[in-house]
Image (cartoon, rainbow, N blue to C red; front, side, top):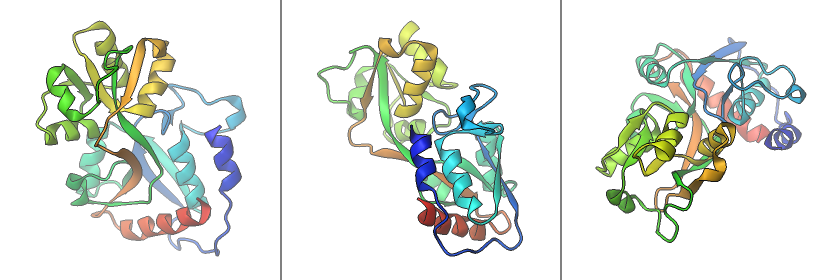
Length: 242
């Protein structure tokens, strides 16, 4: 539904103009449904047409914005820790989708938002009903978060103990089948994963109070040649088509 709505909105209505020296840019990402989806893991419906290796709402926004400049966007799937290391070192142009965090401000420029979602506590069904889902609540429970994701930074900043998991599926499984009470993660991705796993009805999702929403952007390496120009074009064209 979001794809169909977006397709009706993204029309190149601004003044023409192209990036003089670039016809293709390469950005790196991970499988993060529903924002970014590896088609080898979850093939796109036939109605989507040819989506290449990667699709999803954030990718659609990005490609449509740059298409108004005659620029194609190639997306490469790479482990997240390596992506951030390479963005910081200037070895790659940038990453999708990337939260703007203070530690990243030192080495990255950020686009306008591609999408957003709430931080959430994922628990067994009804486990936190009647309680306020704040960070202070976590002192009472065993908590898990994905290694390297924004929620681990939030927990570190609040000096809260937690266990590391490798991804969404493991985070959901440790809540359902092991000794973890709460999996703190990005809500939309967790809902998507739980439906795919067939366990959605066994879980509850509580938006974390006082933390705010996650905003997903493109982050461009400050050390990569012409990154500032590429970032500026995205900001301009995203306003035109969004």
